Length: 170
Image: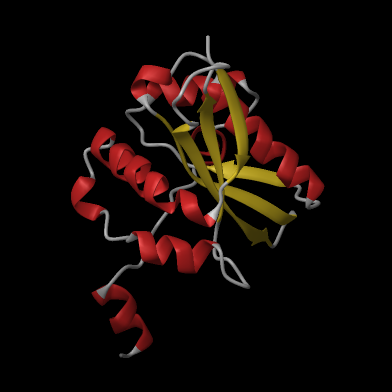
């Protein structure tokens, strides 16, 4: 098996990150919702006050191979605040290309996010998953996550576009 490295994304990775975001959207049957651009990823993740942070999974070439490292997965996270628990890290996306699944790459990304959470003094690590993605839910539970929909009945809501403008009176 090839060697896998999980590392912080660099600005030059944004093209590959966008490719992987589009693959994730296709996997989730939500391709029509992807509006982000490579330029926005650069501006929002690598400026003075980044809106997000990103880890990438790359396959490293074997000694003597001419190909360079290849990005095969990513995890985008940000910091939020819980009024009950304090500092929290939220994993917005995690994705591993289908041909690389089952090799522990997703678990390595999740474990790295957990390390970041502890290093930053977070008391929680949150993420959401579509209700049909049983494989992901099983993985998260196996890693020790609690399903808050089952345990506490939480539902997530989103104001977007016109709803946000109307709410803000604009």
